[in-house]
Length: 462
View (cartoon, rainbow, N blue to C red):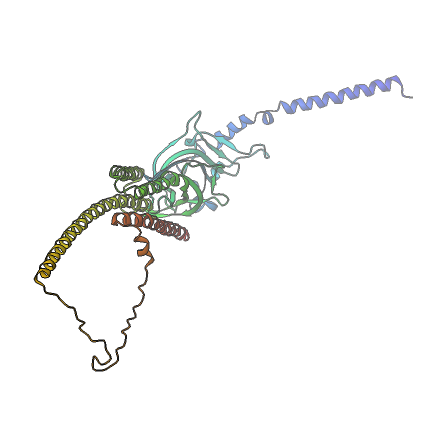
C-alpha cells in the first residue's frame, strides 16, 4: 500500500506536466510566424514586388528563360444581353482570365500554409497587352469594388481575372432570315508585343465556359468554336485568339408574328370569291383593306432589319403573300368587267331576238298576203318530187339507204362542270376559289422545302 508521501509527489508531478503542456501551447499560439500570416504575406509582397527586385516594364521570360512569354486564356460567358440585326452587333458579359508564369514572383509558401497571394491592383505587376479586335464599346464593373483580382502562386504563376461587358461587331448574312444561324466572333490579340515576345494560347481544359441557364430572347447559343487568328502587319506578326459563337434564331417568334398573320390575310382576301358579284362595296373594301394591312405588315418587318442589297427569305414570303392579295383584288376587277360584258351580251341577245321575231312576223304576214292574192287569181301550185322513187329510176339501180356514222363527242368534265354556271363572271369566281388555294399550297411546299434544305446544306460544312 503506497504511503501518503508518494501520492503527493505524483500529484505534484502531474500538475507540473500539465503546466508545461499549457505553456507550450500558449507559446505556439503566440508565435509571430504562425499567428500573423497576413503580416507575412505583406512582407512577401514587399519582397517580390519591391522596386529593387521587380520591374513591371519588363516582360517575363519564357520557358528556360528563353523565348516568348506564354499566356493561357480562358473566358466564361456570363450573359448575352442583346443581338442586334439592324446594327449587326451583339453585347456580351464575360469573365476574362489570363494565366502566365513570372519567375521573378516566386516565394516560400511556408510549407503549404500560403497557397497564393491576392492583389486587387493591376499596376503592381506586368500585364499582357491584350485587346479585343472587334470591340465597339466596353466597360469594366466597379460596383461595389472593381470586379478583378490577381493571384500570385508560390511557383511564380499569375492568374488575372476580370469581369467585362463588351459590345462587339458581328457581320451577319440574312439571306435565310428568319431561318438562319449567325456566327459571331470574339477576337483577342496582342497590341504591341509580337509573337517573338508574347504568345497567346487557349487553356487546354475548358477554354470557353458558358453559364448554366443562359437565356436569349430570340436566339439559342448552339455551340462555340475556338481557333487561332494570328495576323501579320508591317510591324510584325501578332498572336491572336478567336472564338466563334454560333447562334440559332428562334423561329417560333417569327412564325407567330410574321408568317401566320400573312397567311391569314391571304386567306381573308379569298373571301371575296364567295361574295356575290354585285356586292361591289363589300368586295372592294375587303380587297383594299387586306392589301393595305399586308403592306403595313411588310413595312413593319422591314423596319426591324437592315437595308441589305440581297433578297431575304422573309422578303420572298411577304412579296408572294402581297402578290396573292393584290391578285384577289384584280380578280374582282376582272369579274366586274365580265359581269358588265355578260349584261351587254344579254341585251344584244334580247335585241336580236326581238328583231328576229319582228322579221318573222313581217315575213309571215307577207307570205299570207301573197297566198291570198294567188287564191284570188285561181292558180294552184303543185309540188312534184325531184327524184323518182320507182325501181327504174336513177339508171335502173336499186336505191340503197345512205348511212352516216358519227363518233360521239368526248365530254370534257371541266367544261361540263363549268357549263353549270351560265355567266363568265361566275365561272371566274369559281375557278379562282380553286386556283388560288392550290397555287398558294404549292408555293408553301416549295418555300419551306427550299429554305429548310438550304439551311441544312449551309450548316453542314461547319
